[in-house]
Image (cartoon, rainbow, N blue to C red):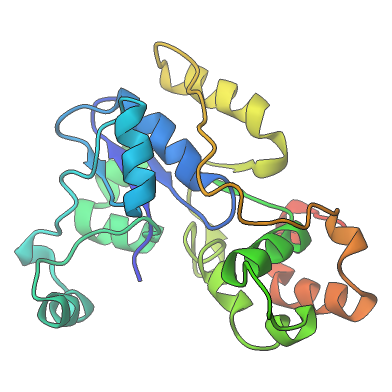
Length: 233
């Protein structure tokens, strides 16, 4: 799967959207500053309605040119009977393949990351919002959590090397949004809507939810992020 993203030719930035890092909210906020030639990927209907209500640009320019198709794009187009498109979690390697290294290197590229234990708990309740739900350990060993991992580290790295200019952190969201607005010279600081909220009823801290064995399992899956960013339980 490709990833959600924005490529702004107007402001010369590429935003790679990672999973469970307020990416949808930030994408909606950024779309207000995009121009007609910018690439904006499609979100869920409810999030597109929120974007329209807030005056943001909707999905545009996200069809992949036919001459840039690879084997996966052809399969995607045949299966869905519509042109292949970028989607809201597109990896850096695909952006580079289609738009070229020159644009990637000359634009400001960035994304957000999140404490893996906090991300795992958030993703658990996102995937299983209501009872009956599997136990946390069943979830962590089912293979589902690897989807969140693929929606993070693998989107902004090539051969396990970070290729975006900056990885901001969900934990510093308010401060980092201001820094990004200044870096991009936006006319104002993006105001983040509360997209995808209201799903998780259990608001306890992840330390109060995860057992020792569950903590270790998350650490095993997200070892690269923990090593690179120094996350602690």
